[in-house]
Length: 277
Image (cartoon, rainbow, N blue to C red; front, top):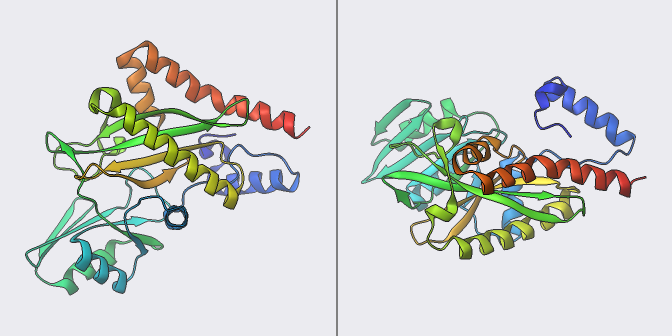
């Protein structure tokens, strides 16, 4: 178990060590790195989990989705923290494209596409943008964390709101967002939490049928303007900064959540060790 692969010598070091461990038939807390947004999306669809429409980036995909939805995100298949994202909006036959601080406004479809193409990383997806609920004009999403423990069973560790900065289309903490307690944010959080747990456990079961052990996973949910819950993406980087912030600001209950978050992987490692002896 290694939360930050940089300590293994980066991606190459990670691949070398995991390859050697697999040859030796060592158990993994996570049997694969959950990072490919396109492969994840296909599992969402196969599991009948509500998720924004997503295609591999191409001219036909761009043309179709901008016609159908007027609001799109272009994302690298393997990236975290909102890195490399491009936002496209269409209104009254005018296109607006936002990419890493650059901004284009044009009436030309061809110019808008060319602008995106020049800034899109290889192996990217293009995704329907949902018009999400906002608070004080700021977008938000919800990061839910599921982990296995000493029993080998999946448990909901906790969830927190990520509230973006004013004027941003992204809620990532790495983009300036802040962490908030969902129980203070939603009047119906108890009901919402039940739905999150059902979807999360269903998704983990489907992932494990495809990829093997999923010892821990972060699932990003959005709530649209009709109050419908959607799964946006899954992560193996679970976002400990939000939990630390809430533990420091909110006290005992969030400190217990943080303790569970930090302790469960070691408990699950002990379970795997016992099962594989």
